Length: 304
Image (tube, rainbow, N blue to C red; front, side, top):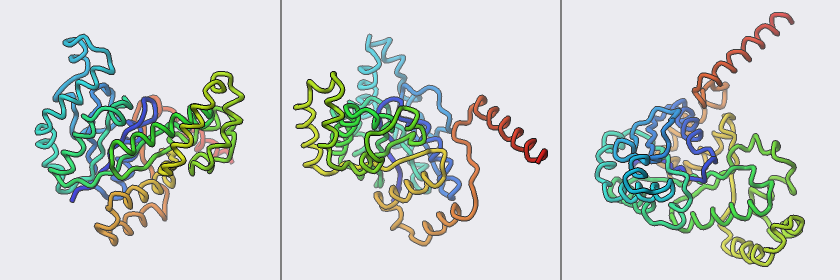
């Protein structure tokens, strides 16, 4: 029985950073982690990639050969992967015995609420390789600052949940940066718990662009309320407590916690006692900044 995560979300929501940080965090817990890059447009990977779709097909080659744009090229790549799923299965076989899998998917949202190819790839892997996967749907937290964008994020999350039919966790990523985009109209709990959306109507009507669509927006909010499926967890990928809380939710959703309860308890005891030191970005500029900050702190301490 193999466990893992399907990491999805719009462009810029932090999928690659998430896979980088999550893989390091889980490794510190003692899990053997393998990251599988299935995004043919992601050519600057900050993490060590166990399997890379570019070994099978490259987006740049598809665009040049078939005169397609980025969106059409990504759809073609997912279709090609579905038809050559045996390639991915062969690559996964050496990993499934003792690895926890992270699948880094493209950011084109149509692949996950409209087209069937990505869903077919996931379903075939689940059935043939007995995988226990949870979909982690990342949404940039700054969308909460705009009522219209927040409703769009809710609708996207709901559509994706219904389309993929997987254990599913919606996550507001970059929660540490949310205040940089302005004040929220309500407490954060309103946005994470998706409470009565009728309260958004006033804020929507203050924006001339949204006011003329208020009837449509109201109907969409009613659909979201009627399903009652969408809520959000929050994530600051640089905060160990935030990442740890999300891991606990994921382990419950895909059943990992029930596969070895004693082992899970031991794992989380490792992060309770002492701070962890793991590098999320692994880029020279960020590392240099951290080194300068550390030198400044040490100098200040000596002066004191």
